[in-house]
Length: 254
Ligand SMILES: C[S@@+](CC[C@H](N)C(=O)[O-])C[C@H]1O[C@@H](n2cnc3c(N)ncnc32)[C@H](O)[C@@H]1O
Image (cartoon, rainbow, N blue to C red; front, side):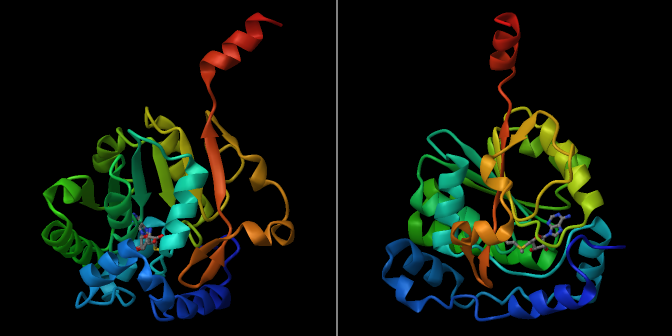
């Protein structure tokens, strides 16, 4: 299957780049939440390599098994761009070993976070990390983390995402047909109001949402707006739910 913007060589180069030491930002360990995350994940297995059957399952889903993460600064920036605020429920679709959802629970007590991961190996590490999180930060923190194993597009998981209000998907190497199906699934979730992705949805794939202005300029004009990821920096695309009541008000006044 043809992967958008990712010929095989590029996908391989990226996959290799993603294997760079996961925490290359030692200076940041002065930050208390980063120190907590470092303690939680110390001793847990590395999740870059997957057994062959898991690679095949992820590829068959239309997703991609290459692994990389938002850094803690990247997580904060994505939450800010999503306009995260009290009462929000974040869904990280393709949550890997759960760092983003754990960071949210540790530093944003007003937020609940749901992670969905297809790889059982990565999901198991996330579950163990939540256990450590509970031990270190308490049950009240761990309680705000939900970890689900499965395909983010599976109808069985869709209901579990009905509470989500803001969504992040590290969709960099996901194919177009996957993005089409993801758009349909997210458009049907009743409470989702903002979505951040690492690749742009194909035109028309996300009914009921509008693209943020920041999606339009070519890459070279928005280099300084990229967010920090473990493989460097990545462009984030943003989508906002169209407020139907405002639309009908403006129609009435026409
Ligand atoms: C690049 S990692 C992102 C990790 C984390 N969300 C972050 O950004 O820090 C993408 C993850 O998506 C997972 N994935 C790929 N296809 C998936 C699918 N169909 N359903 C659920 N997870 C999937 C991969 O196994 C991988 O762990």
